Image (tube, rainbow, N blue to C red; front, side, top):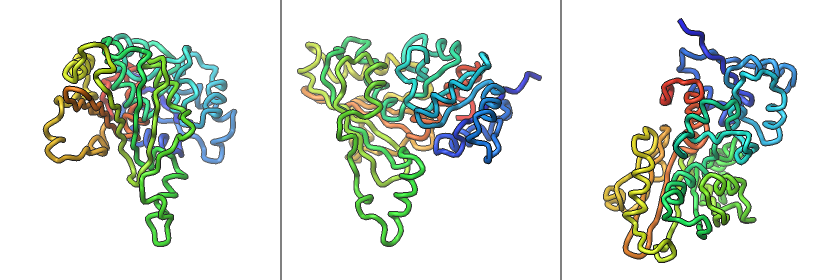
Length: 319
């Protein structure tokens, strides 16, 4: 019998860490290392567990992730970081296997993997194939809107929304709330770095009164693209790029099922590791949309998928 891989989650009490533990709990091929709750901030204890792990997930704020990475002395420990600390660091591999040819091999070979952000994952999966195909130019001016459930804001935001549902709760939390109004959202750098776009997208994130689910929308005037580009060409580029990908589903052009209801279901990928991609188009305009579970493929599911790739496991194992 082969040795079970050892796994440690540094930051196991956060939203992402707890969800990773749920994925790991059903796995018989892994030994999950746990820190004594009283020692979870003890650098020596954390360092010992990090060095004992084949794979360690860092589910921490950016500064704490950098500190944790500096604690590791075992060259065989693979770190998968869920923060924004390393997503554009050339020494870390971006943990999105579907990004491009060779990405899986890079994840398999690397001991430092940066897990993509939730908004960024949806945006990158929409945009990268179009840039690669020459349908979008790197200098293209792009705007994107993302609506997400409140679980993406972590424990404090979850508690705030749950309290708002009680009598006397904050009425402001009952309606969608755009944020990132400084136009400097932390995901923008990785959105540029991993799409090939050289102009920062105008990005509008919105948090709303539902627990999880996320959808990014990118509107395009076809006349602003390369001459002759059609909605069908945009759709075909996505189909070709993701052919054979088990977690990426490119829906039919101007998806009839969605049009029949007249509304887009933001939460249809919840409790999966799937991403659905859409192109709605007429002769002059196209609307690109992606949806995912912000706690699944947008966070914890993506991290476990990257672990599976790195360890050479079946990629969908536990997902």
